[in-house]
Image 1 (tube, helix red, strand yellow):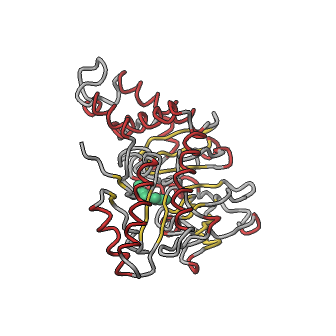
Image 2: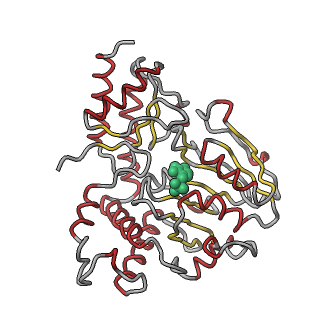
Image 3: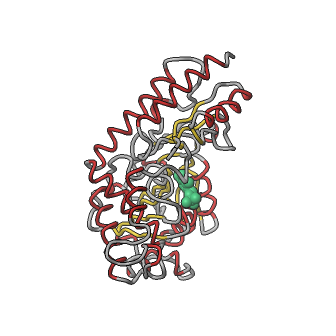
Length: 360
Ligand SMILES: *Cc1c(COP(=O)(O)O)cnc(C)c1O
């Protein structure tokens, strides 16, 4: 076995113990005599899998009882449409633009009504999170949408914005279960699983119960959260195997001690990398300190040729997918839960070596 350190933003690394556990029961799950991939989603064996996955996620995130947990398909991008369809009752919603995904969500929202961009950091190339106060939001907005961690730019909210009584809807695709969050501050939390939870194919939606049942009449059944909640995420066939894998990931974190422990490990990994970046002047970290993401670390050399060379050379050293998003260039190291500390240490050692061998 010759596994590399995979810094991909998504789909991304999964914890090795999780992959090994999945491999050990790939062909025959428990006493079922079949793979989880071959199971009816209505079978008792599968019912137990999905119920445990939900229970473990609830335990992990301390999700209050008045929230539903939905295991859906279609990626976070499908939720960009599902959000206005389920929540835009009076026809108004406010969006904070902090990067590409929040902008996509906003554009999708505009198809369904009066979606307003109340704040944007586009002028600053999304290197900061726009500052807002309660007064920036329209009191009659049905919700405020944010992207909590900006995967492409490597920024994250330093604090949950205050929206008063307006439900806050947060895309947490690239930071969910990386640290504890106070779920009660949000109306809806949603995340594509392929960054920090499971293989692609699963989207988790955590929604406060009083926000259910308001979907517009034309809402496709598959996007209707109430319908999905009423059917325990089994209105149709759910992404069975991804849910099983997510369950293994939740178990792995719970066994480690939960999200406080995960947060501590993640903070240490991110600090290693940022401390190195701040200690030298070969590489530049473009994100303002207070908004730095713990999951996606972006940096540049300031020289386009070297920025091109870096990820190529890194691959030869077993450090994969360090090229930044094509829209911003430079480098990006995604260091999700599954990235071991040794991976970050190997990256820093490589960065030092590369700087020495490639003077500017
Ligand atoms: C990757 C990502 C998305 C898009 O997710 P899909 O599941 O591919 O639709 C949306 N938001 C954020 C923050 C992401 O990182």
